[in-house]
Image 1 (tube, rainbow, N blue to C red):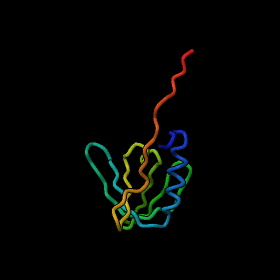
Image 2 (cartoon, rainbow, N blue to C red):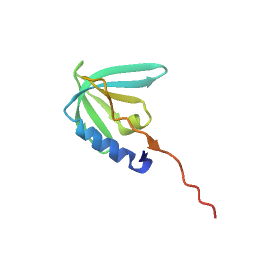
Image 3 (tube, helix red, strand yellow):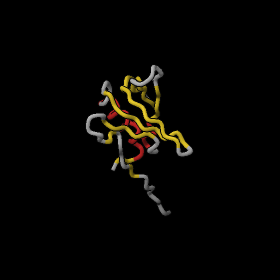
Image 4 (cartoon, helix red, strand yellow):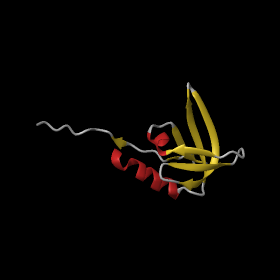
Length: 97
């Protein structure tokens, strides 16, 4: 399990590792709507990453929070293995005085 304080740093580092690979992205747009797209991670920034889509010319940008909240699923094209999937420790320590 990853501590939530280190969650974005871990997601960013892993997204950097998949940079340049063609991947499948399934994005929960809301209201039971899902967008499926295929693309390559071309840029990894402090709070988001950018995808060059292979199906249309328009790029897509996602935040690390999209992965953290399970709004975005990233899978490999060849084996269908889910990537950038984490289990975070969200428990809070309670201190009694």
